[in-house]
Image 1 (spheres, rainbow, N blue to C red):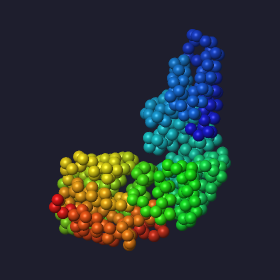
Image 2 (tube, rainbow, N blue to C red):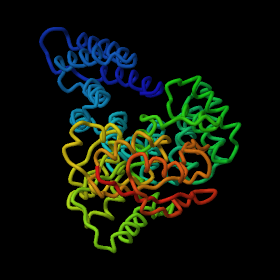
Image 3 (cartoon, rainbow, N blue to C red):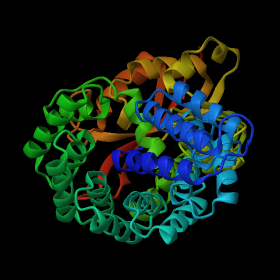
Image 4 (cartoon, helix red, strand yellow):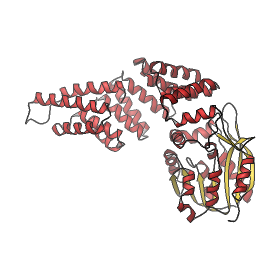
Length: 467
């Protein structure tokens, strides 16, 4: 809950506690019991706002012993359940409140928050709209509705929602920030810059706004200015591994690999729009090109007993090989990408794990893969020495190792200003030789049609020698 929401909850707690008649007649008088409930709610909300969920939960439970239908206690108990990751319980509690208090705008808003977390986005939209119908000046709900529209790729509707929130509360830093995100998605970078700047003026220590401002400045080619914002972000949030990675990229420091939490968060956020964005925005054809290359080498007659898709994402590559693989396994660091892959039903086994840790796990030696695929995985891994050695241990004799890399002319590997890695053909040749692979194919390809120019890469197929 943000500050405005906390004030609203405290006010609502006092108002509702005063208005509700207690359900028990024995003991203290009705007036006394109402006063006790009001005081208890105030104390519980104080603990809740301070982050002491255990104490707040205990007091809410005590209130419900006195009045089982007390709406504020039920509602905020539902909020705590949501904060503790117990979303089903949260839905049940808040829905129970709304059955008898249908005009409780805060409860509709928080039910929307739970649905958003559960990725039930249409239900989230419906809950937010009910809250707004009850209270049209509920700025937080307009902002929350905008966030869901953003996830639904309805950026125009998102912008409209954020503007409504800001019309109600012009000093709402989070709404300015979110508006910037939506404008950036629409390609309106100058307007996005203005929104991020407004968020920072209101809230100078807003690390996310500094980070996003840096990203847009980088998109605009203003790298020195972007670096300033990234460094300011690190001052405010030293644990931000993505920004630390980008500072390395912009200062010419080549690290060995991207931080795991950065990659996980990046693709968890990207999961819902991954396929659509790659195909329709970036003209991504690597999965098809990989299959064509394998068919070329096998005269279209290759079949594989067991295949492994490293960094499988939502399964776009695996779909192109499913008909020639008796068994298909996939591994990815992002849980939400794996959810997307599971929905496609193209894998026989899926693993949420770092690819190197997966390959080096002792049980991997109990069977071999005769096809291993890695589509654009290596743009997030600079040094490939460890992964090549790990692949060599789990690939069958004569097995194919199919992968793509971003083009590098000199050196082994490099961290680019984009935050992606590139590897040279000479580096791949050196690693192939060291791990008893022969290079069967190397084709120059366009990895994706990104702006300002297409990204050039190489598609490789290596074959494992007898071990």
